Image (spheres, rainbow, N blue to C red):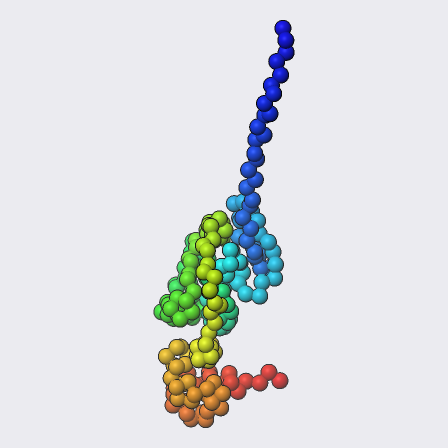
Length: 229
């Protein structure tokens, strides 16, 4: 019996290589439970020093705060600076983490003397004035799942004529004044309207500042007169 040879080449099976999604994380996040959870979800985290935000996912800047950190950074004005820095990115998100572990309003009032309505007002300011969407997560696992889903989403095509948005001089001046304790958008606009520039506001006579700010003027005057020497 003759041996029959197959003259047709066998088709080689193509192996589809699925690349893991990669996100960039600030080096201060490297020991966080979020990074460990991301790895278990099949997401690689590239650790770098980020000047702005804690995570970068497909061009989206993400600032992550636990509830305790959110309250403390709100109280010492650090979050205001971070929100301003986030404006450099067209897409940005603030994650407030830990609603399964800590109550935002009650705990804050008892521990740091921050009234719940002050927190609510600040949250509204983040959304309306700074245009930063907020995501509330239950814990670090929930945060990691949000980041994982975001890393797997297909990026939308951006128009070629898009331009980088930035604050105008007028908006930046208002933003700087809003960083002072007790001064919101309304008061900042009123001061700029009356005095014209930040320099004029700072150099204004104390009597004029007290007239415009009332009791809030004490803290304002103390800060602008404070010496680091």
